[in-house]
Length: 237
Image (cartoon, rainbow, N blue to C red; front, side, top):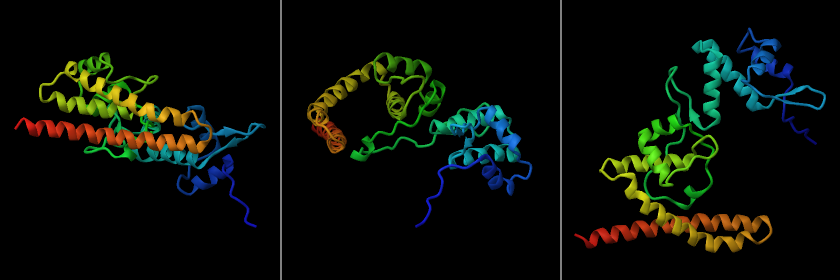
């Protein structure tokens, strides 16, 4: 019977894996990088460090940035933070990190309604990624089109911000977009009328079913909305 591989590495094993690529790496340096908050290995009850493969890759990223780009630890730490929040680190010092996954254009499918809020943007990053001004962002926030979760904005906020920025190029201000929020809230209410009874049922299958129904209904509501707008515009010609 095969023995399953351990899910963690000791500090000595991490050193062994990195030594060939980084000849000057030592246990003391690994401990120093941990003390600086660049890695956060778990600990056993007796206090020994437990490194995961993710810890190993973070260490490799840090060491490469030091050796090949001569970046100071503060900049490397900022880059790691950006990556943890779903961003591509800034290419130059002082630049703003950008979202790794751009919002998709075109007609939405049910798969795009799955939860995908790993992205976490600061206000400056959202403004940079969406091309909104600070004043525009403040305005659409006041109308409830975008809200911040904790200290960051998520992928939904980015999608809304990008759409608002593109619409504003036609001279349509945020105050005119409140109707979209009202219509969306009504559609959400209709979806919840269907999914709420499913969520009240017990068991993981019921929850999974509710999630699938929610995604499908959301997709269908977008299709219906787009079709009605298209039909209405055709009647005016």
